[in-house]
Image (cartoon, rainbow, N blue to C red):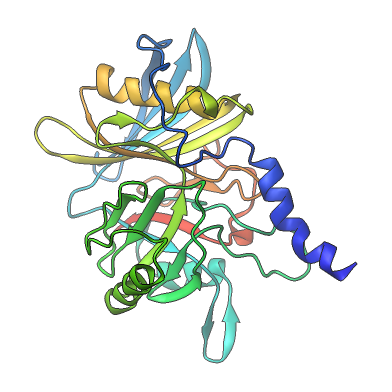
Length: 311
């Protein structure tokens, strides 16, 4: 019976996450070239006009919001990957976040990677699914081959996305299937004190990376897009789509909205967790929480957390 309880969280994740994308599921020849138009309407700006919120609609129906963050030197990002030890005591992700934020102006926080355990379970041993490193410490060394986005947060709080399928990492290893190459990468992550997690790669280098095989399950969606405009200005955009949709449809609509409607170069789009840990909080420049754009799980339950902030 104990074994059943130990493996149940992972089984629940695998069964519930039906739209995971295998490495070989990248045939985009059947992508609709003229998808339904995703429209946006400006709602408000904050943080000295560096953050802008839009209401999103499709076919005349409101489906969610997008939060645009201009990634100049004033806005930074941070990722909390796992609970840690502080003064000899375990410190949860939320406790780390509370201690760390100090006088920072929090713009947004949300769950990032998928987790193996769910709120309310007694053991509180949840870890992120796939390769996970927290400030240079390896938490989970298992590569999940259904997830080919490797998200790396540097010591200087720079968030980058790499394509595992094409081994597009800075240290140039050939394959994580080779133990020596994987060990070399983990040594590099330790030396750089990097924080790393895996998730699904929906777009990379201005191309879609998902086919109709991603039309398996309708649910609410949240994705993070990283783009540049023609002036080489960088933006990170959270698309929070509260109306259920297929992952393929979400990726396609967001991609063409950014590329065709907004004229952006789409560096990457990655999938974020909206399952058991559906965490999202948005704050204005005065620190007031937005009550309309919010996840349905309390941030106190977070097992990992992406944070955007300024000073």
